[in-house]
Image (cartoon, rainbow, N blue to C red):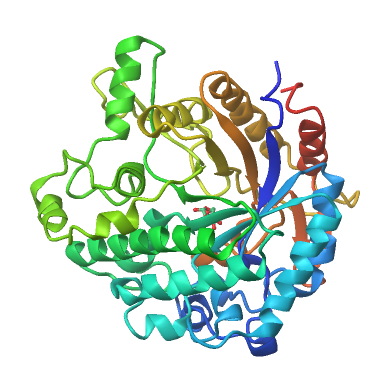
Length: 446
Ligand code: BGC
C-alpha cells in the first residue's frame, strides 16, 4: 500500500527561523527582530539575526531538497523584507532574494509553496497595534497583492497564515512569543478576528493579483483528540472532544478559526462570553472572511487520547516523549485528518510534522537520529491509513534544516539536515536518507 498517486513529499521552513540577514539590503524589522533584543525573552539570549544564514545559503538548501527527492518546499516570505514599513514602498532587493530562491527551486523541479505569514509581522505595524488593529488586515492584503503580482506564474501554491492559534496564544495571550503581550480574552478574540480578515482579504488579493491559476489555503493547528480504544463510541467521543469549546480553551482549537474561514461564522455552540464577541462582529465581515479555499494545511505534532466519555486518558509513567518533551502520539495522524475532513470537506496538506531530537555530530562524522526515523515511520503509517479515507494532498516535514526554535532559541533541533551553527556546515542526518527513500517510493516501505 502506498500513498495516493501524486502525493507531495516536501519539507517546510520559515523565514525568521532560517534566513538570518536581519538587516540586509533594505529589510525592515519584524516583531521577532525586536523581541529577541529584550533580555530574558529567548533562551540563552539567542536571536535569529544569523539563524542558518539561509539568505546566503539557500542554494545548498535547495540542493538537499533535490537530493531527498522532494517535490515541494514550503517557506515563508519575511514581510518587512518586501515592505519595510508593512505597506507602501517595496524593497526590490528583498524581492530579488525570493526571485533567486523561487527560480532555483523551479530549475530543480521543486514546487515553491509560499507561506505569506509565518509570524514575521513588520515592527512598524506592531507599533500601530499589530493584530489588534483591524488595519493590519488591509496591510496584509497589500503585501499579498505585491507577492501575487510579482510571482505570477512562478508561485501557484500559497498558504496565507501559519497557525493563527499559536501566534495569538503565544504572542498576544501568554507573552512567550513576539510581541510578548498578555491581552485579555476579548482582545485575543479581536486579534483572531483581524487575522481572519487578513486571511480572507489575502485570498482575494492572491486571486486578483495572479493571472495564472493559483491554489490557496490557510494553516491551522489545535487540539486533536483520538480514541484510546478503536470502538465506534470512543471515536465519536474523540471527535466531539476535538470540537468542544470552553471559555478558557477556545484559542487552541481548529474550529474557532476554520469554521470562520470555511463556513463564515464562529462555532454555533460557543460559550456565552465568546458568543458576546461573535454578536459584535459587523455582518459584512463574514463576506470578507469566508473565501473559497482549495485546501486546509494542518500542522500536527501530537494529540490527546480520550476515553469513550471524551475524557483525557492520562499518559502512563515514562510515556514516549521528544527532546522538547512533547508526547509521541502517532494515532493523531490518522484521526486528526479524518475529523477535519469530515467537518470541512476540503482536501488537506500536512503542512508540518516532525520532532526535535538532541542531535549531535558523532565521532564518525554522521548525525544519527534513530528517534526521528522511528517517529516518522509511526506517524506516516497512521497518515497512510487516513489517506485511504480522506483526500490528502501531501506532507511537509518540519523542518528542512535545524533552525531557530522561537523562544527556545537553538536548543531544539527539528531538521532533516543538521546545522553546525558556528561554521554553518550542513550535514544530512540519517533521517534525511530515510526520508529520501520514503519520498522516492511514495511511502511504500512504511
Ligand atoms: C511552528 C514552527 C515551529 C514548530 C515546532 C509550529 O507550531 O509553525 O514554526 O518551529 O511548530 O515548535
